Length: 101
Image (cartoon, rainbow, N blue to C red):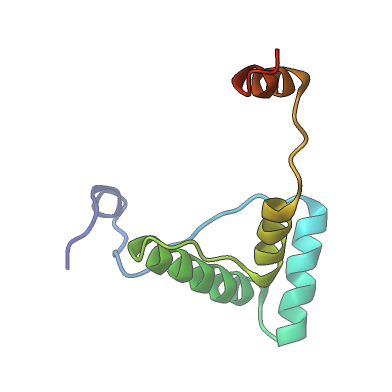
């Protein structure tokens, strides 16, 4: 198995690693509560959720598709269906292109 230069330099195996993340107190509190709901450690929760999400995003990028959560799908749909608010310059350009001005 190949090892990265940094892992060779530090004497770590390429099979395991650690990740330090800085969080604001509110985010950390939510992670802690979510981990407690699953009866697992916060590290296990972060690993379980983030790795699964990262895997989905990587697979979706290989398929050249966009993967949305249900909430993101709804927001995207609403944005597509919303009537755009044209600026004054856009309205003038539209009138000019239609030969109205």
